[in-house]
Length: 286
Image (tube, rainbow, N blue to C red; front, side, top):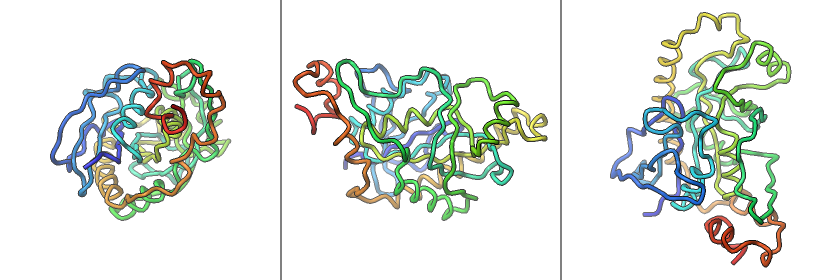
């Protein structure tokens, strides 16, 4: 049975307890090593690949993540859908700790992160107006509701650089702009998944209010860790339910994202670049 569904676990979600028939798979990529070995297993009757975003023991900073290697590895494994879980802070009163938000937009506040497979003689520009797969996001939100989570559909995820949290001035500015949650990891994954023609959706797991909230100063590390643990349990239930709902073949635009994106004429693309990106561009360029 081929692996078609990928799962990325963020802070607090380092494993999927329901996985059976497990095996670890190390994937070599032209971009270096992924965050760790992919854990292949069976979940709700389907083969999935799980990757702990920050590595075993949570040892990789958001700005140190090798996003290209992580997504390339999923592509090589045959993944067509990625469900990503990420701990976030809330920027609105109505989004409470332990709630789940399934965003439909991003706002980028990162600095210099590599977020494309293109370059090295190959130019391409994918459409990214709608950065998440709508169909997969609906599945994720439906699954969250089905397992009893308080879920919010749609919203903007501010992707900050970190590892420090926001200043009070920044947090207030994001709120004035109408942003919804803030995190440090998902934007680059979404961009690269689009270039790899993989459907991508995020479960934004709210751990606390960002520093704009008057009670923020009373938030302790112990409280955040406790919320992470509770979020991880709900995330596992949600992801398992979502996996059970995913069925192909895909009909969304994600599957053909590169069809009109590549500008460089094939004869001008360096052979090494063609070879390295063959899993992504092979159907468009030999």
